[in-house]
Image 1: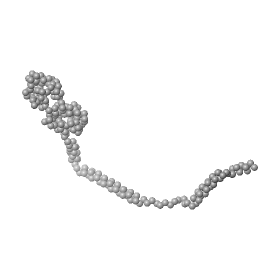
Image 2: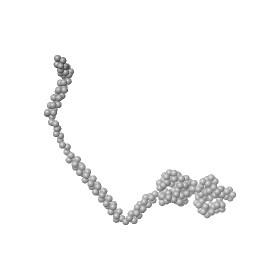
Image 3: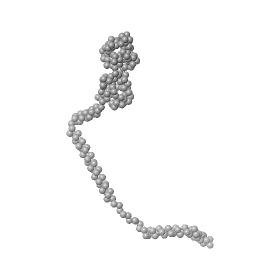
Length: 236
C-alpha cells in the first residue's frame, strides 16, 4: 500500500503542473513537425562575382603597366648616365651647386637681421653681432672685415663670401673736431692710447685742418693711418 501511494504521489499532478507539461508537449510536437516539413538545407541564389573579376583584372593590368613604365624609366636613366662622360657629370653637378649658392646677394652695410640670416651659418645671434660691430665701425669697406666680428672664422666666411657685397659709399665718417672721447673710443680701430693722443692734439692745436694731420700723432704710422683714414673727416 505504501509503494502504491508513493507512485500515485509521483505520477499525480496539480493543475499548474499539468499546464506546464502540456506546454512542453506542444513545443516538442512543433519541433517534430518543423523537422518533418521544413527541408534541412535552404537553397540560396549563388552570388555573381563576375563584376569583381573584371575590376580585379583591370587593376592587375594597370599595376603591371605602371611597373613596366617604372622599369623603363630606370633603364633610360642608367643609359643616359652611361653615355655622358663622368667628368662632365661632375662639372655639371659642381655648376648646379655653385648656381644654388649664388642665387642671391646681401649688402652687408644695409642688411637687417633677417637679411643676414639668409646667409649660410648665420643665425640670430651672429646677425646681431655683425650689426653691432657695423654700427661701432661705421660700416664695412670690404668683405673681409667680417672676419673682425667676434666668432667669425675663415670657414664660416668662405660659406658666405660669394653671397655678400659691400656698398662703400654708405660708410659713416666721424668728425675729428667734434667727436667726443667716449664716442671715438667705441670705434674698433681707435685704441685708448690713440684716442687719448687725438684728444690731446686737438686741445693743443684747437682743431684739425686736414685728416693728414693724424700722421703728426705719435703711434700713427702708415699702417694705422691707412686703417683709420676711411672713417674720419674734418668738417662737414
